Amino acid sequence: MAEVVFRDLAEHQGLGSRIVSSSAGTGEWHVGERADHRTIETLQRRGYDGSQHRAKQFTAASFADNDLVVALDRTHERILREWARDEDQVGKVILLLSFDRDADGMDVPDPYYADTAMFDAVLAMIETATRGLFRQLEPALRPSRTTPRTTPQN
Image (tube, rainbow, N blue to C red; front, side):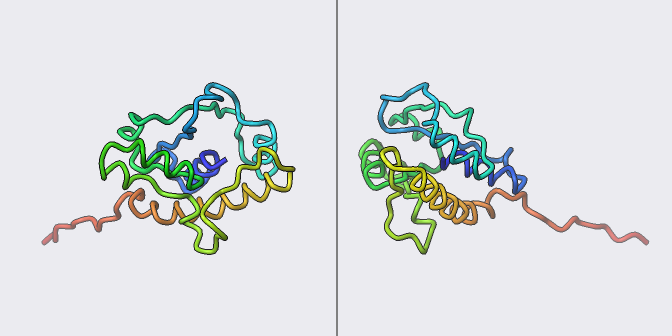
């Protein structure tokens, strides 16, 4: 959900070409599979397209390809930090809900064993936190607006 929401936000802000975003789990058990049909349906109800998502696995080597590694819960955050090879890589790992100052806790719950209402609630959490993350990143993504130099003419 988070990748789809973040990508959609970047596209709507005209910055989709300046951002590379991907989703990956810390385990290999679903590699290559589509997102759970309830996730896709939840995204569709809110106007997002999650149909192209395929599960991938994050590995220690993935740190080199990413400027920021966003974890959805503290368990994944801990795993990712353990995989980091140095302090620079550790510094790339951050929790998504840290970008939502009103979040009740730091973990995005896994709705897999829950009902549709929980999938909707998780998506709402992700949307709020993703907007906060985007607000932090946006200034660095926008092309600088410098005043054009002019030469006085006589």
